[in-house]
Amino acid sequence: MTGKLMLPQAFEPARAFFEQSVQPYIHITLQKDESISRTDSKLFGVPYFPLNMPFPTNKDNRPLKLLAQLNFAQMPNFSYFPTTGILQFFIDPYDDIHGMDFDDGTNQAGFRVIYHEAVEQMMAEQELPTYDESELMMPGVQEVKMHFTQKTQPISLEDFRAQHLPNEVAEQYDAWDDYIKLHYNEPLHQVGGYSFFTQTDPREYEYSDYTVMLLQIDSQMDLDLLWGDVGIANFFVTEEQLKNRDFSRVLYNWDCG
Image 1 (tube, one colour):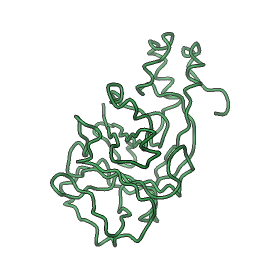
Image 2 (cartoon, rainbow, N blue to C red):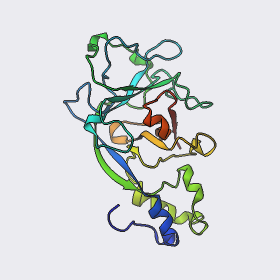
Image 3 (cartoon, rainbow, N blue to C red):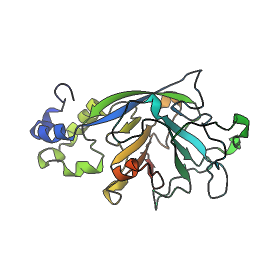
Image 4 (tube, helix red, strand yellow):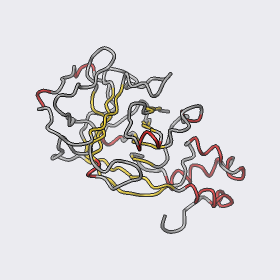
């Protein structure tokens, strides 16, 4: 962290708490680009996918569709994340809740997170599954490229760890909006750091060891990117899962106002 952390005046009595909470993260900017490749870090579009690997499907054996992919060679080195390979996030394009399971957020029947340790020969585009465009219910369709900047941020007031806010600021509700404008007032696309929610952090009740945010994708109206009623989506793992490159029990959540 460089410089003094900016805080609303009402939060000054708890400055030590907020300064100690600061974490690094990778901020993602989404941009339209005419030259996005199959292996680029991006939202939507045609995915990289290797030969001789089954394409992910939903419970009805219909193909999932790419939400996002991270090419780690294009990103700053960060924490325990890989430095090479591609991590992909697929969701059910025929489901109005985008493949999320309300009862078990780690159930990947309607979504899939896949890590390709190395970039290999890929399927030709014409070999990839096709979709019934009239039935798709994706949160967006515009292929956009990701650009990355490493930053820091203090704790999100929506993050389950904020339940430990000092008493002297916990009820300063008028100052919360000012705090959000200072530190969470942009499209909150990011890797790592603290999560944001329009409703409740599911980790408040279980999954409390899922402290690593693999990816967060916010709504962004100028790109027609919309989770329900201007919501936000998050994918989490435990630190141990990330170190082991185990993405079989990723926690997926999205909510809206």
